[in-house]
Amino acid sequence: MAITKSAKKAHRQSLRKKAFNDVRRKALRGALKGARLAKGGDAAALSAAYQAIDKALKRGLMHKNTAARRKASVAKLLKA
Image 1: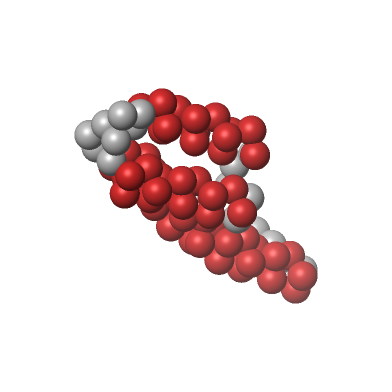
Image 2: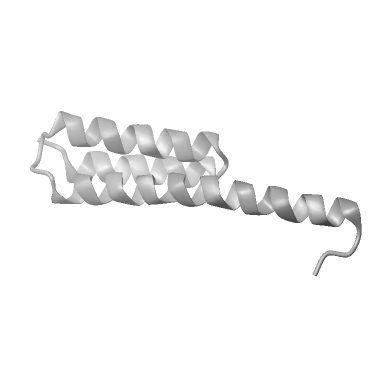
């Protein structure tokens, strides 16, 4: 358990960041699942998946190469 005042504050901040990251990660997983279940050539599913991946990348939830790989696999999956 945190003892110092600064350690307690850092713990509160980490919990707040974890809550935001969990929401973003859940949205990412939902968008990727929607893309997997979509028919080929579905532009809306592709757009939603790209948006979720880009937001996760911007928030620092994944590395840029991971984001690029996921985008490529979604595009390949939904290629008409």
